[in-house]
Structure formats: structure tokens, C-alpha cells
Length: 400
Image (tube, rainbow, N blue to C red; front, side, top):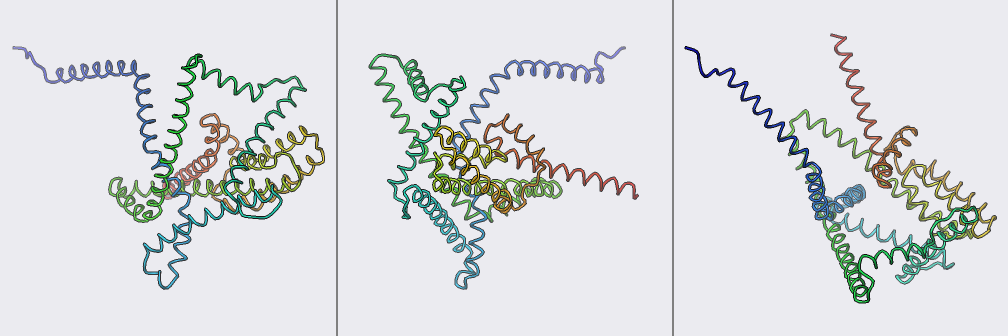
């Protein structure tokens, strides 16, 4: 008698049914992929918003860690403090915060003293006045560029038109009657207050987190190093540790160096231009500093804004002096200051830098350009490690 149940064919049938069911489920999921991505994006956005103080605190601690480590090392040499490592660490954090605050205070004093023509320490009223002055310079510079372009029949909207369009958009959203405008105004004020409150709270918690991270960084590093070694295994942990060391070298040195270089350029260009009588000195200095965060952008910003500002005012002598000043400062920065600050942490061919900047700009805008170079440096190092590994492996195989 023939068997009604064949185990082999039963397994095949079961596999076919499961494959069809899984395929059908995948088709259904792909049909809902848009909604799933949208939900996932919202969840990620919510999570990042909640964890933003934690992330900011981690970034602040990461940037300040070498400074704290330096002061901790110095304090350990003091006879009374050498054996009290926790106290040395806490004092190092306090010294770091005080030094950074003092440096900011001195930099503001130098900038304001340059524009007021007498040397004195900064006051809060003068900081407000400087911020207001830079804002007016920005508006005037934009209007000057607009009028200059009008001579060549290039039309861009005026600053007043931009503000009017913004007001018109708000009125269209909220309605045009008095009650709606009052509601819109009240909602706007509440929104601003809520934003200010959230910003203060976020940065307050970020500073608290950064202090905890700075104080316990060594213990946290040892704990997670042991945890990942247990989870990943000795070999995988070793590979990851080398990769993280490369990542730290590329990012830490580059970001810290570029930030310090940007502050140097903003300060020196602002003061030099103020003494030379170049129009919009503070605005050009700040824009040059921001531009210097991205390779090759700072010089274009400095030269371009200097030429435009002087052409708008008709000050050809000031333009010539400004160009010479920018050339001297950029030469000193490019050959002495910037290499010293970066400490050879990023070694990337100029062509790769430009390609990385193009991709970074397309993917993430300004921040993409800022991170493009260290990412390119990291990928270059990993590529060279793979090549070296393959060469050694081939040499060992041939040797055998």
C-alpha cells in the first residue's frame, strides 16, 4: 500500500508555504514602507529631542577632555593633591571652566576695546551693543550688495521685502482680522518664551551632563571597554578599538583645531580690519572665522566680503589694505597656526578634500562640509589598513 504521508515532500511543501507567506508579508511591508519610515523618523526625532542635552553634554565633554586631562596631570604633581585623584579631577574641571570663561571675557574685551578705541574690560551693555552693531552691519551689508547687483541688472529682494513676506505668511496662516492677529501675536510670544525656556533647560542639563562625563570619563571608558570585550570577543574588540582610536584621532584633533583656528581668524581679522578702517570689520571677521571651519572656504569669504564692502563704500584704498591684511593673516594661519592646531591629525590629499566637501555639502549642508574632511581621513586610514592587511596576508601565503 502506498504511503499517504511522505516526510520528504512534507518538508518541501512546508518550506514552499513558508517562503510564499514570507514573500507576501514582505510585499505588504514594502507597501507600507513609506508610513513605516515616517513613523521611524518621528520616533527618532522625538528620541533625539529628548536626548539632546545628553548628546550636547557628551560633545562638550569630548571637546574639553584633553584640557581637563592636562590640568589633572599638573595637579597630580602637587604634593598635597597627588594622591587624591578625584579631587585633582574636580579641580581640573573647575579650572577649565574658569579659564574658558576668562578667555571669552578677554576676547570680547579686545574686540570691544578695538571698536571703542580705549582699552577696558567688557561690560554686559557693551556686549549687547556689539551684537546689535553686528546685526545692523549684516543688514546694511546685504542692502549694499543688493544695490551693487542692481547696477548690473541683477535683482534680489530687499531686506524689508523679506520681512514683509514673512509677516504676510504669518497673517495668511493666522487670519487677517484683529482677533486673529492678537492671537497670533500672543501665540508667537508664548512660542518665543517656550523656546527660550527649553534652550536654557537643554543647555543647563547639557553642562551638568558634561561635568559628570568629564569627572567619570576614565571609569566610564574602562567599564565600556571591558563590557565590549566581553560582548564582542577579543578579536572583534581589538579591531573596533583600533577603529575607534583612528576615529578619535581624525575627529577630535580636527574639530578642536578648526574651532580654535576659527576663533583665531575671527579675532585677528576683526581687530586688524577695525584698525585699518575697513567697513563692516566685525562682520567680515566673524564670517571669515565661520568660513575657516571648512577648508578653502575662509579665504574666499574674507577676500569676497572685503572687496564687496569696500566697493559699496567706494573705499579703494581700504580695499587694497584689507586684501593685503587678509593675505598676510591667511599665510600665517595656513603655514603656522592651522598646522600647529591640527597637529597632523588629518592627512588627506587636497583632491580628496574637495571631493569630500562636495559630498558633505550635498548630504548635510554646512555641517556636512564640516565633518566631511575627518570622515574622509578616517576612511583613508581604514582603506590603508585593509590594503596593508591584504599585502601581509599575500606575503605570508607566498612564503608558505
